[in-house]
Image (cartoon, rainbow, N blue to C red; front, side, top):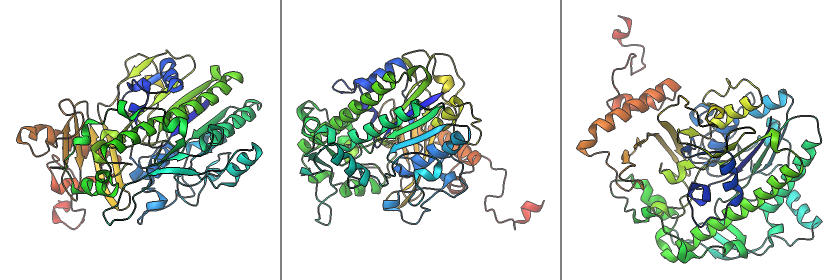
Length: 489
């Protein structure tokens, strides 16, 4: 079976009509949800670009593949996967697939998509590389104007300097946008692959709607800011929370801008999503024109979410809130039931085994991945009742582990305050109840379950938990010294 894998960057689930946004302009993705499977509890393994994308490529959790930070903010972790790293793309190539990637790579620094068997232009970095020769050639060939922006939106840093650029108007028509260029190159590759007697895997990775939100006027002004509801968690006080969250709020300059600007930023973010949806529509139209719909599975997801003002934050970072860990996830497999909605906890990691199963390849090397194919129907499927996520830092090392169940979320922060949220009574995660006496049983149960999962995986974070919390009985020497006389009895 062919596979079209559509991926965005830093994309909130609640920007899509299929996920309940009444104002959204996302007809293409909403149609994909209507004709396929919508996953309502789809999570990223870690809310940062490079580690999440490396997990998709390898089917391994971040602690296992060890590519833990973006190159641009790396503070000492490895910067590339090893040369002998297994990847689903090389497995597809070995099985006779054409394998293409158009758009954002960002899986390491020196090793590029071509090193893992992908066709396509080399587009490095975290943002639209608007100075890339292939993009410049595209503009020239189509007599389109160059990249230029104005009306920048940014706040003020704690040291008085200008904050990160959050949004700006683009002085280009839609046809000149990087998003249009990427869709055009993807269509060209679809046409090439459709003409060859081989199955294909094509991944189209947009760099947006990652901030800064830079779009033409028609998308910059598509949504009226006065109609935007601010997130409830904008009432965040950071009381009882790890101090790093308030520091991150200052780093992202939230309190230096009026709430009207926050509304406008959310409106522009939705416009950016609408632009990408329109470009995905062009690709889907090409699929139909080329007669590929009946033998091509289509995925849509992203690497992680985005705050857009939630918890008085922007971007992502050391705060394991639903805003950045729960993401959209759609899958349409030819012949499946339409309009399926699943509430099991699934992960971006699970795409790897799914791709392999669709291609008829043994998914066993994707050791932390589980195929979603059985969930693309309304049948009962045995599945875990929780999900574990991890984080290792961005700008600075910051280890975290999280377990999420139907009702509760526990976050372990070794340097600071642990967090526990009751998502039934507090879906916006404003009240940390970790220290509340009445939560002792829940806290202990989740801590022991998290410990068990981490230990079974081989994630050495569990060693910290062994000595710090009630994790139940252990059947090993927790000092790992090998010198305690008790170990020889």
